[in-house]
Image (cartoon, rainbow, N blue to C red; front, top):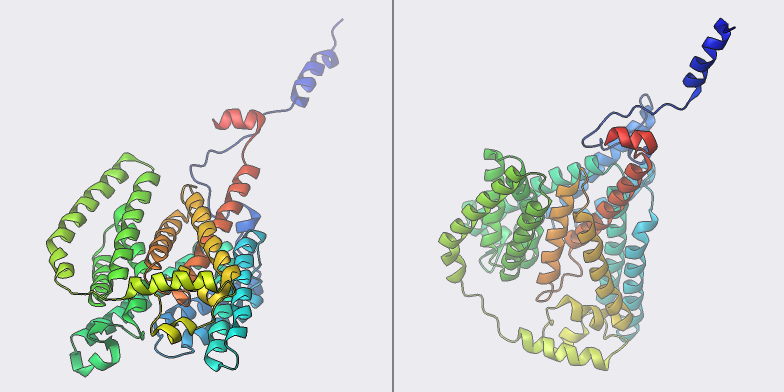
Length: 435
């Protein structure tokens, strides 16, 4: 005889079987998809205050980066304040940044060793100290960007664009000698903004110009962005820096190509293609401005030949300023500079630093993350800077080390993001239902 208990038994057994988990399909996980990217816990006022303090100091520090006509600059002083803000906010050193840090360490160790070739010279000691400071700055930027990436990168972007516009505006006013400002913001009739050298001023403007270009290519075009980009590019042209023009052209081509390759739909690719075609036509129309400017310089490549022979004769390096003292001018090639000033140990470390940064940057570009537009523009600007460095000494450019830290910080954030998505990916029945 079947009782009510017997009838209930199969029902209880069925209810005891594992049931497939419910999974809500999410097209693009939010930035804070894992504890690694978790915002400060609600109600934790101290944590919120520390992060806001860090963002404010980041903004002020980047804002001051366009004032570089004195040494040390206000930006250098503010980097000390930023270091304190990092400690307060609990910014951490990630082991994925260790490769960059160790190569910078060996680069500077080589530079300190070559100081024995130029003893009792205050200027050379200051040079070595600046190299160490910039290595620390790059590491700090990488650590900052590795966490809370979107918010911190948005702060850097906003401050950098604003200060680039101010510097560009000053450079344009100086070039046309408006209100007698020519002597303040130009050098040899070339726009410099608040920099001492137009060849440093012009590359400083390129990353914000790329950020605006990428935004107009992929997302939207606004009158404000057009006007802002026009001011920055105008100052870039009036700097009459051949290297910076080539740098900007190469980096812009990279931004267009990478944005096209990583676009999610056909309509975005079509938009990028059409806007690029219009830009090429405009460039052709205005190309006579570049062609009409005589920028020839004699002796640069001859000095590079001499420098190549010198680095073979001095495996321990010559020390800062020694090549210029002996031959009357610098060789204007940062890779030769790395061997001449930092010795073979420092030179090899610097080359490896560049190659590893290019490698991790390229790998990061093709990973879909919320901050991929920043990866594309930072990587493109860094590639252009690497190319320009064949004809100029960029080993003490502040913005170069910001870009260096940016690439490594975004790489670290992307690695964590991939791991967090892998850890939260559905498995078993959940994976089947999610598909």
